[in-house]
Figure (cartoon, helix red, strand yellow):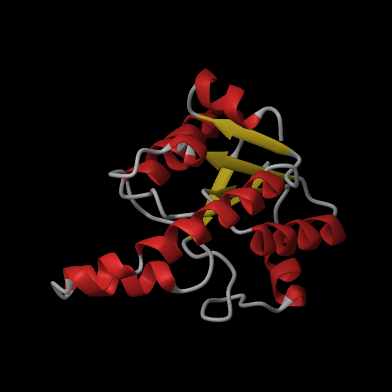
Length: 171
């Protein structure tokens, strides 16, 4: 079985949710290829549906990690549907119950305010960054609603804990 994993990051979370798990499955003939970027207008295969289908057509299973964008999940699912490939989502974060000090707290925020906030913080412009907090909170809440809908799209969901499975189960 050939599996492609599209990673949203290359850090520890991807390593233990995808790489470690699928490396253990090699003994059963499972081969994992990784694509270290999610489709977007800035990355290959970009937002070209045909290019994405061409990419995933070589695999038996498509795995995506930590996607919170409804539009991106729909785009990947459409390609999987047209290529007749199952889509599995892997996540290790409970975005719905994060505390505000968690670095991922605003990760479901829509639009570009989160990038602007991070840039301002990195530049030491704390007051300017804090002025964005009400907008970020509004976008985070809207993004959470989209994320809940996105959870209903894949054919399967893998979580790292039973508690997280319970959080995602209603969707």
